[in-house]
Image (tube, rainbow, N blue to C red; front, side):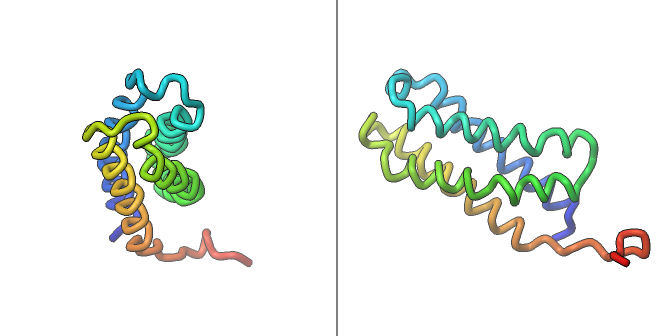
Amino acid sequence: MTPEAAVERINLILAHAWMVRQFLKHADEVQEDEEMLDVHRMIYDYSRAVEPARMRGDVADYLHRARSKLSKLRKVAEFFAANYQRVSMHTNFEMAAVSLKFVVQQIEEVLASVTPPARTAASALP
């Protein structure tokens, strides 16, 4: 996958993460639980971390930021999947947890499939 295609794909995947964020942000069940609040906050942070690079068309910076923040997104996705039942057993929470873990998996797959850009004389190290 080209770096440009990877950026577009990750951006589409993040739309799904954003829906999970919106659900959790407005769920009364999580409002008193700081650890649960961290889930929607991390989705926000991840999305906002890559957004400026996308707006500038800086593919290399976007992919760098997507990689560098992914471990934090993975951590909250795993936390949420393991702990959502303590706030609610409702199917909405279960599906949000499944969705967020799938988002992380999809981003990992996209990043693993990116074909590095060809090095140019200007980008080669001396």
